Image (tube, rainbow, N blue to C red; front, side, top):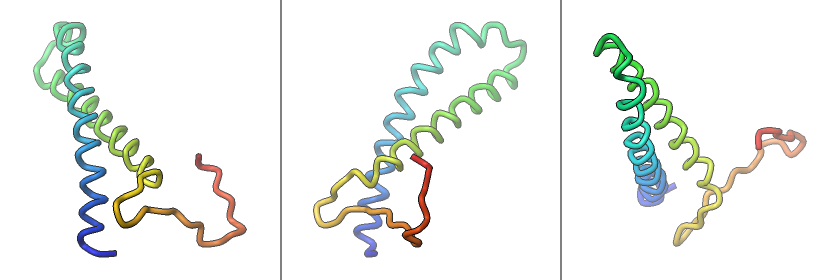
Length: 93
């Protein structure tokens, strides 16, 4: 594994995960600001709720992009998952 290939994989993951996270977080944050936060009594509680929801959105999209990585064909390589034991049958689709 070269540094260039490592960078290509990281970049593939980073910009897609960040773009999806930012777009969805802006939309969700807009609706939270309108429908939820007016009913929250303190700024600390609103910040905590926003951070938890934003963190969840970031984790979800980070994993979503990572899951799509084996389908991507880079210019000079592709990422493949190979089971260590052929008898092991993974049930994690």
